[in-house]
Image (cartoon, rainbow, N blue to C red; front, side, top):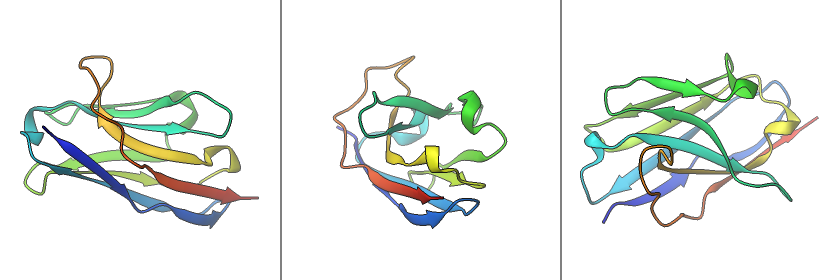
Length: 117
């Protein structure tokens, strides 16, 4: 069973940057299509970015051009580079399998990202 652990969140001013990490433990990471999600207070969890096992990526419109998803199959890790952050990016960020092609795993604790104006 694959277990996932997110890290790298924090408090930044608008326009700042953060790099989130997702470490995978167990399972076979390199054959999994992965994704970053986020959940803002009072809102449903939303899919933010996806990356296939081959490295093909996709993004929700609101983060295109600002966020970059990547993965390191040797390190069993996935990353989300977030630039030009906006207050509306404030949320708890989670990593998991891409829900469009697989049943998601048990959700981890996530990592809090707070962007001040």
